[in-house]
Length: 156
Image (tube, rainbow, N blue to C red; front, side, top):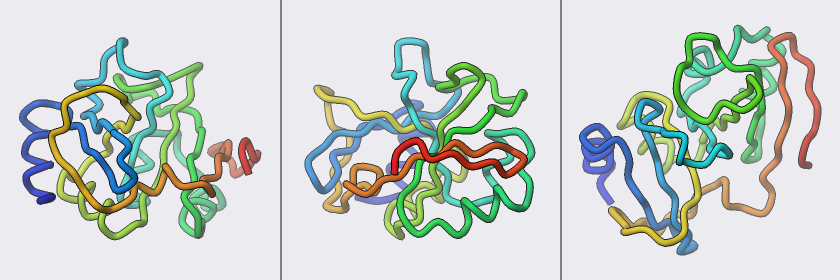
């Protein structure tokens, strides 16, 4: 699976379906292409810490450190940035994850902006990868993270 081919299709069609290493299907969507018929449980994927600013309210250094030093795959729930207009926003909050796995990080880097991830079941597959997607692992954590640095474990 070529990262550039995935990024090119994502830019042209707004979404791609990938079959990852465990055989599960995932859809990656440009936020502008996300619609109300998509999952409200979608998660924004980012490849670098600086991208948090486009998704959430301004974070304190403590909050940024929590994300930066996380060693396991983690999904964060945080108040949405007021300028974010489209994507899975529920009760004024977004979910996001900084993807550190080298393969998936490079794929996200090729597109160069946050994308929305949602699990899908029966859809035509655009690309296949032998790499397992980190958010499908058994040890995924979920935390509520406020801009002020308050942390609440939602799933440990």
